[in-house]
Structure formats: structure tokens, C-alpha cells
Length: 505
Image (cartoon, rainbow, N blue to C red; front, side, top):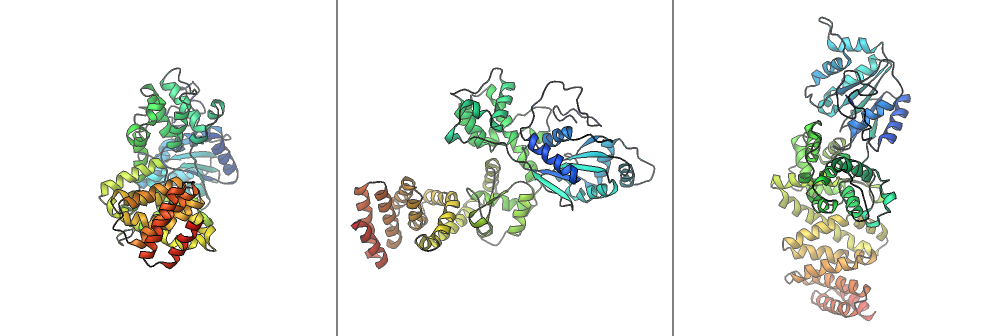
């Protein structure tokens, strides 16, 4: 198969006779090719992993094209349509053009053929038949000069395998936009410009549309497939008009090139391809994890996603599987605690699945309960010897705290919103979230007349202090005096002293 135009050949040619123009080169080609070169010298099995839409196939074929020559050739074996691992040997035999021999098993024929040749096999979409992974190991054992380059959403788990996680394209920060020349150096923007130019002659990035192009690329997570699909829309939509629709990515990004596989013609298809690899328990976990915002710890996943004890898969095993299938990513949180994140395009798909499941409301309540409890655990620590650690933790969980606050207020649950606000206002003060903190507290207090006085006292105190730090002295005094009255009503002597202290200040 030609890496550029997908024209199929039995032998993988350096140049496709059907494709003479210079095609789009994946921006990640150079680092991947270098990784492939390094691994091919010392190792014999390299697996390119990543979620749908990261151009793993293109990268593998382009990297193979640039590797050193193999005496026996380079062969591409597409496995996307194969669902039976028993057909693995047949697909490889067909790609190599090896003649079958009577009643000799295909595996033995293939191993005998490979034992005498130096060649590279490019196995594409092996996650479809992951149970065939041990057969790859058998081929490597039989062919001492064989090397294998695999694309898969899941590592093979073989001894000697070296995994290269294909990264998204580099994207600019829309809040700190560089000049036009520097902007086009970002891989995602460069791809957008190239594909938009192919869709609409004369398209170029200028001062007027540069902010929209940069934000589109950033909000599409730097995924090559998503950016190509978006760029094709410039034929009908300006970047500014497109930006207003990017929030509905899965509906907007359809209609890829007709000669691509269906799963690569829409962003939804690319994500569904990975989702279909999950078992039922993993699908439930994946959907429930959509309730989080900005990442999640394993502790939070266990507490929220299995709040009723009905999850059919162990949370750790499920998370490991989602990581392997490229539906989750892993980041280092405070104190190197792992946090599990979703690309926003994947997150949108997970939210749809959660809504379809009918569990969204119940999972949302579990999420709120967990983060109310976390906020109240943090409150006494924010002025104690462990404050640095807890400030870092609340910063990492700020997205989830915001989600819990928003959900509580929408549901009319002022008590939960005020419990969070009363617990974390000191965090908002120290980290400079003055206006945001005041908005959350004011919204909770507006409907929180029935909330116990002790909770309202803490919220009023926070509202007063945040106003004080913004120089709004009238509102500061109003909030602190109200908190003093409520602390006295709740017989909270410590709170009363605290309110008097800041009123004195």
C-alpha cells in the first residue's frame, strides 16, 4: 500500500507509480523515523501506539520508507478488516506472495520462508486480532533477520517489544498567540494550512483568522485526523464560523477522503474503533469516567465510578485496559501521583455514552459527594504544615471542583455548593481566583437560605475575604459581619474569632 494514496501493492514500493505529486508528510515523521531507526538497529519489534486519528498508519509507512534497505523487501499487511486471529498467517502469506505447500500448515510455510530472508513486516491495526500477538513472536523467532513494525491501539505485550506512543501534533496556546511566521511552525497549524489549501484554493492564515485557526487546532487536541477533517470544512465555513461549532466536534468532523477506510472518514468512527475493543464492564467504566473534568486519580475513579459497588471490572484493571487501548492518557500529578486524562475529543464521545446509559445523574451525584468530601478534608490543611501539598492537590482538582459546583447549582443543591465554597475559599484567595470564588459563593448563597448556619457562615466569610483582596471594602465588611452573626448563631467560637480578626484588619 502506498502510504500517500493508499494504492495497494503486494510489495511495498519506495515510489508509487500512481502517486507522483509530493503528498502530505505527517509532521511527526522525523521523530518517529528516528525512533524506528534507533530501535531497528538494536531491536526487532517496534509498536506505534496511540488513539484513533493520530496517523499511526501513515507514520509507520513513511518511517518504513525512510529506513535502511532490507534485502528481502518491505511488506505491508493491513489487518483492519480481520477479526479472526486464525487468519493472521493467511494475511501475512498473502502479503508476501508465498506459495502454499500441500498439507503443510501455513505457519510452518511462513516460518520456513522467513528463516532465509531479511525483510520488514509492517503490521497495521493489529489491535483487531490482539490474540494473534504470540504468532508475531513465533515469526520473529523463526526469522533471525526479520524485523516487525506494528501499529496498534494496544501494546502487544511481547518480550522484546518496544513501544512508541505517537504524540499529538504540537499546538499553539491561543491565549498567547505568536506572530504569523512562528504560528505556521506548529505542526497542527501547518497541517491545517496544507489541508485547507487543498480544499479551497488560495486559503492562507492572516491576522484576521489566525486566532480562530490556532484555537481550532488546540481544541482538537492536535489530532491529525480531526484537523484534516476540520480543514476540509473551510470550503464552506470560515475558521471563525467553524470555531463556533467545534464544541460539537463529533458532528462537525465528518466527510474525509472517499478512498480512506470508513473509520478514518469521521472522528467518531476513529473513536468508535477503539471503543468497540472494550468489553462491557470496560465500556461502563469508560462512560462513567466522563463525569470528571481535567483528569482523575485512581482513588477518585474507584469512589465515583463504583460508588454502588456494581462495576463489573476492577477499577485498576479497567483503567489499565483503557490506557492500553489509547482511550486514556497518563500524567504525573502532585507528588508524582498518576492522573488519568482523556483527549477532549474522546471525552465528548464518553459523555455521549454516559448520557445514553441513563446513569449520568447518579454518577454526577457520586462525583459531587466525592469532591465535597475532598474539599472538606482539605480545609483544615490549607492553614497547616501540609498546606503546600494540599494547595497543589486542589489546583490539580480545580476542574473537578468547578464541575461539582456547577452541577450542584444547576440541581438546586446549594448545600453541596456552599460546602465546597466554604472549604476552599482560602485556596481561591492564595491562588488569586478572587472573582471566580466570589461568583461561586454568591450563587450558592442566593439559594441557600435553608443551608445550616455553620456552612453559610464559612461561605460568607470567604465572600468577605475575597472581596477584601479585590479592594471592595464595602462588600468585605458586609460579608464578614454576616459571617460573624452566623458563626455566633452556630456557636462556632473559632469562626467568630476569625471573623473579628478580619473585620479588625
